[in-house]
Structure formats: structure tokens, C-alpha cells
Image (tube, rainbow, N blue to C red; front, side):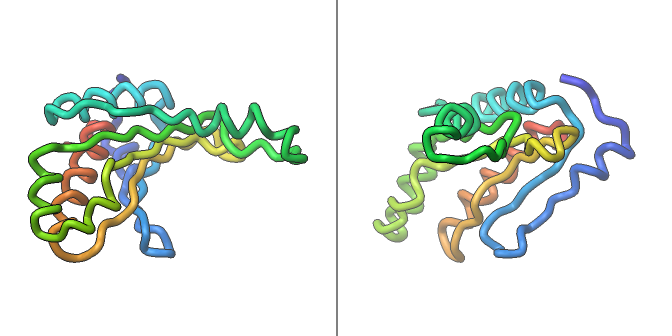
Length: 147
């Protein structure tokens, strides 16, 4: 993975989306480097990647079938995983927290701005789920080499 200079790290500053429902980090790192960092950050937490959803490939493959000529992403993937320990903790606090599992982190490269790769996750509600959000943020930051 390419190391970022101090100036480039500033570009990775967190951005809370206007809708306040996700946190994103933008970087100038290569998409494959961010994916490599994300996979390692998840594994470094002792977690198993449940699934990788290749959203960008699916959207491109089905673009003509749905009558669109818009190319949205150069690359876009969503990684899902769970933590048995943390999931048990948050579901013991409130069994309806099951609706947030598995947890996901997305990485995308918009076709209109291919020089920027975005990595992020959905925010979690107040209460026990904030601990999951802290985990997601830690993994995301580690993927970029920020922690």
C-alpha cells in the first residue's frame, strides 16, 4: 500500500454526510490499495469477511438492461462482516439490534471523480450500537493507514 504524505492525509479527513446517516473518508490512494487495507484491517480485528458485494460490477453489467447509459462507478464494493462478541453485547442490550448485522463498509470510486476513492459506513443509533460504529470507524481508519 502506498504511504501517504502528511498533506495527503489531510485529504482523508472524515466527512459526515449531509443526511447524517454515514461517515466517509476520501483518499487519493489507489482503489486496490484501499481494498487491501480494508481486508487486512477487518482480519486484524480477528473478524471474518462474510461477503463482498461487487456493487459496481453489478450496476455496470445491468446498466443497459435497465435502460440507463449512466456509468456510476469505476469500482464499488461492500464488505460485510460481524463480531460474535460485539454482536452478542449489542443484542443483549436490545434484541432488535439484529437489524444492523452484518456490519458493512463500502469502498467506491465514482466515475466522475476517479482520482478519489471513498470508504465509509452507515452511522449507528445512540446507545449500544455506538460501540459498533466505533469499530467500523477504527477499521476504516486502519484501512487508510490513519491509525
